[in-house]
Every structure is written in structure tokens, then in C-alpha cells.
Length: 537
Image (cartoon, rainbow, N blue to C red; front, side, top):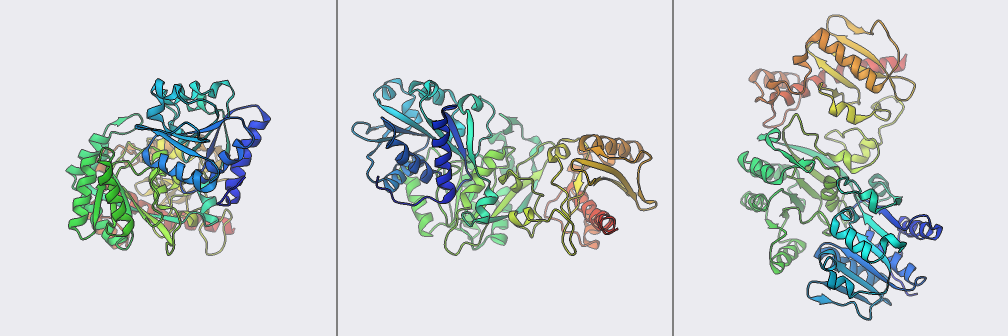
């Protein structure tokens, strides 16, 4: 069997896990979850080359987008040149006399087109997080997926829950975290910057299907003049980087491209319904360096391969970790001279939406990186306090409990969760027993105070008692996330206090955001010092 492109160790392991699980005979519909940039087309190509030598039948690769179809066909031919590969989509019908058929789901959804394809012994689904859709289920069922035929799915994100992915995929047999690939050098490290747009009120944007509504989000970006804020931020932080801007609508993508270009950063827009030749021309100019930034309406989240790109602008704030991973993953591939990747997260005022961020790239518990930290640097904070190093307090915490609480929980630079309450702080002191915490109150007049019933609590219970104490003693207005004053513009007094205390404040920050920054700075100075003193004792 002639093959080229020796697989990386983890790629070979993924192939082994699939074939071993099929041989065991317990499940036939198996998935592999790998970060964007891990080379899933290489893996599926080696899988096909390996399995077809043992199976009677042909392989069917199902994809949903032009770029994915072309990439899969090209990679299979490169990895296994002895295999004949045909494409089935629209006007192409190359299924006779070939070993591997790469087909679009849209074409296979037509009964007549799929009925003409016979002799399938293996099915591979690219971007298999789409497979709960009716069209996929119908096609997979037609070719024998529920009758024992080996089926492999590949994706970077297995997060969709509205449609029964668990009914399609019986098991995830291999999974690799993005931090593992960064550590091995197969992906570059990444750092993030917040771009806070003055006047962008995300609370006014409704949700649909669990995420911010595209049309309303696009209008909110337009009304706030976000394009110029973003172009200015790009010029400040990424002037020498080729980049990709993700937007919610075509109009927003085109507007962004115009404003970037007018600001001296050559940009061009691409979108789904753009004529094929026009899009190919723009992508060719981008590859040649004639265009520095591509703006797009959600067409470059899958199947887009531009390793030289090193900046992703998330001008489509999202509540979906899966979508966020797909967007950022476009700029994590290594390339000559590429040191790292930069993510510019476009944000506005929001008290009710929990937006995905850079920590959602990994499945491991990682504290939100500081401005000067990369993701791997944040993940490398030691678990045990050491002289001159930050404390790691997050490994036993359920972070979602803090985000979903109606009370305003903040975090010091070293990871200690606290409630700001005027001149006092209520905080959770990690116990020596994993998963347990003690409650503490600190105030300017009385210093550190333990409660009368000082004992270890599970996190949820500790949070509840801390919140009750803050409400009873300090008053709810100072601790609630939904306080009206938080969405107002920052006052001159607040801004003056931030300057006096040397607390960095972004342009257009709301009163709530400035208040949070001041509280975090004060709590970091007081509480982290107390914690170090306790650890030293």
C-alpha cells in the first residue's frame, strides 16, 4: 500500500483508536475530536487508506462546504496516491470506478443522487458536529450507519445539543486538547485583547437558538460605530499581522472591510453567496499578501486554511464555545516566522450574556489570562504557592457557578473569587480539601473576619452563604450584576479615581466595568497579600 505524508504520533493514534473500536464490535458510529489545525484531513486520509485494504467496499466522505470537499479530495490523493478519488456535488458525478467518493451533503440529500452510489463499506463525516441535522441522519441511514457500517466523524467542537448528536455518535474514541498541541509545537500559542466598543449594548440583542441573533447583533455593531473602534484597535495591536475578522452579517463584513481600508489596513470581504470566482480572487490576493485582512460573514469558520494568518478579530461576540473555537482556530496553525496568534475580542456592555472567551479554547480549567499572558502561560500557573509566583486557585472551582450567580463575583489577579461590597470584600478561601471552601469577610475598618460558624463548605453552599451575608450586611445594590448604574457611562469621578490608583481603563468602559477594575485592583492588593501571608504561616 503506497502512502505519503507520515502521520504525526497523535494522528496515527487516532486512526488506531477508530480501527480498534470497530474491531471490538461494540459501536460503529465513532467520533474523533481534535483542535482546528490538528490535521483531521490527514487523519481521515490515512484512515481510509488503512481501512480500505481490509474492507470490501468503497469509502464515502461527506462534507458540507466547497472548500472542505476540495481539501479532503486533495489530501486523500496526496496521502494515498494509489486510490482513485471522485467528487459528487452539483454538476459533478464522479462515483463510478473510484475507491473514494467525496460528496456534498446537499447533493446526497437528493434521493436520486445518493441511490446511484453503491458499494460503500466506510463512511467518514467531516465537521461531524452538523450530523444531527435531518439531512445527515437520512443520508447516513441510507448507507447503513444504523446497520453496523463503520462510520467515523471528525470535528473540533462536539458541543451542539439541539438535535441529538448523542443519537448519531455512540462514542468519542479519541480527543486531544489544544494545550497539548501548543506544547508540542503543532499549534502556536495565543493571547487575547479586549476591544470594548463604546455604545455597544449587547443586552439589547436577543438570543436565538442559544446565541446572539445575527441581524440584531449586526445592527448593534453598526449603530455603535464599532467598525472604526475595531480598525483602530487592529492598527494598535496587530498592524503587522495578517488577520481574519468574523462578523454576524454580510453588511457588517463589507462595512468592516471599507473602514479598515480607509484606515490604511488593506482589507476585503467574503461571504457565502459571493460569486465563486470573486471569492477565489479575494482569497488569492490574501494569500499573495495584497490583502492584509479578510472580513467575513461566518464562511471562514470551517475549511479555511491560511497558516500565515496570526490575528482573529471576533466581531461576532458569541455565547457558543464551539463557534468561538472554530473562529479562533483559523489563526493557530504554525507558519515560518509566526511566533503566536492574537485574538481581539470585541465586547460591549453586557450583564446578562455569558460570552465565550479565550479560555473556552481548552477543555482544561484555566484562569482567564491577564493582558500580558498567553493561554499556555495562564495554564502553567503552579498549583502550589511558590516565592515570586502567582497562586493557582482555580483547579477545584466550578467556574460556571460564579458566572450564573445573580451576585457580582469578581476575581483577583491571582485567582481568588470575591464579592465587592462597598468598603468590604466577601471571599472564598480554598480549603486544603479539594472542592471545599471557607468564607471570609475583609473590611477597611475591621480587617479580616471569619464567620461565627467557621467550617469548610462545598463551593455552591459557600457561595450561597457569602451572598446572603453580603446582602444582609452591605445591601444588594452594591453586589448585584443587574444594578442600573452599571450600564451608564463611567463618571468623571470614577475615571479620576482610576487614574489616581493607576488602574488601566479602556476607552468607552461603562461605570460597571470601571467599578469592577477598581475593585479587582484593590482586592488584589489586599486579599492576595492576606492569602500569601496565610500560606507562609
